[in-house]
Image 1 (cartoon, rainbow, N blue to C red):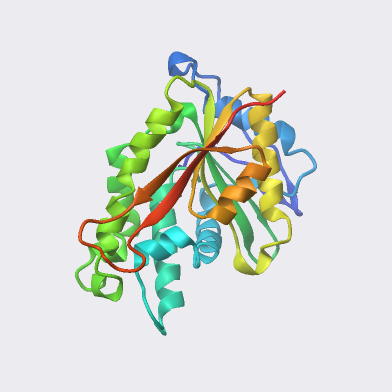
Image 2: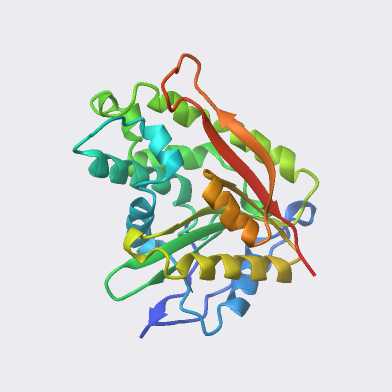
Length: 275
């Protein structure tokens, strides 16, 4: 997402994020303003800051790096055997997919983007959508196509560089949108964890833990649930440590795909407010 003046960095310290005038959301859903205000409260004395449009390029670079070995993105790519260009292909795929998914967060039009960075680079990034903003609009996909281009498997000159079922595998994700509606039906106030990633050389240093602690503290203060989708048993275990539970395991498979990696499991999880 993308739009309002956001918190910036000043000598390594976060400055206050501008909050727009209050707006009325439909049916008592969680608003962007409520989410921003609660995050501001919990960001005090933290090295996590709001990100804006000017941070987008750095954040996408961090996410592309973080997702190079991601199981779901690897399933999309369908690269088998020793591919000398694997790293470049995965980085390109990760960057453009994250751009399509997250571009409206950096302006604030769909939700919030947060990150941690050093003087050299963006270390990690997390994007969050309040329940009033989770609906995806066709116009946003069109804008993303014009701005970032289509993913490589949609391009005649590039699709042969990826697996034969790469495009169909990506399209299978549509089922997750319906699953999300089913599992959050009747819940008005909730936050969707859209994306979270830590640059590979900065992993296991506590950055992801800080992000998730901020998310859970903020959600509890708002009396809001959290919903996410993840793609491995190890990630499922990690989120369970933070109080999430699995509401469904979804098997994705493309008709006619009989490769060893044909079946892929996505874990749908939620956490309800505690205390």
